[in-house]
Image 1 (tube, rainbow, N blue to C red):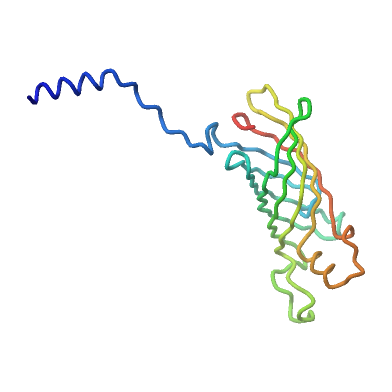
Image 2: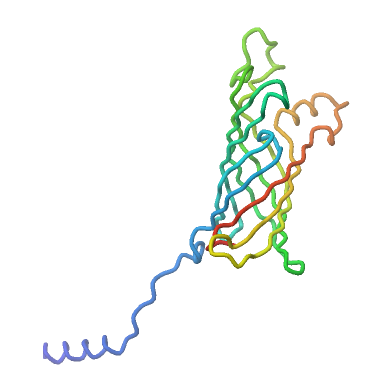
Length: 196
């Protein structure tokens, strides 16, 4: 009886196809990593960084380092940013992939007269620390796929953003126009091979 059951089970296993490995639906093609370089945008005169796409490219997030030289603002400033964003949609025009997105960056800056909490000699409830900020933004990215061993896509982007303290000042002072607290930045993204 035991020999019969073993023979049947061995025969059953021999005709079954091997199970396919379970795939992660959010990462079927591996990590979608990119490098970026940016001009302006509350992250220094210029900044560089790297990031990744998540959840089937619905979300992206990157970290970057930016530098504002002294000749641009009379003081040198180093800025570190964490910048998550939600990709609202994606569509194609000819060979270009277009994607609008929105997010809020968190930035921390270091330099002369930059502080987390305002010094005691500043009036309370008016001056705040200027080292850490949240910067909301909206952007538009346009990319073209490449046939390259190292790069799968090259994208250009532009963003319109502001900073939390500028929103606060505009809310307190109705004479400040909304367009006066906006800034524009431009950048390029290098999508490493294996991502889109």
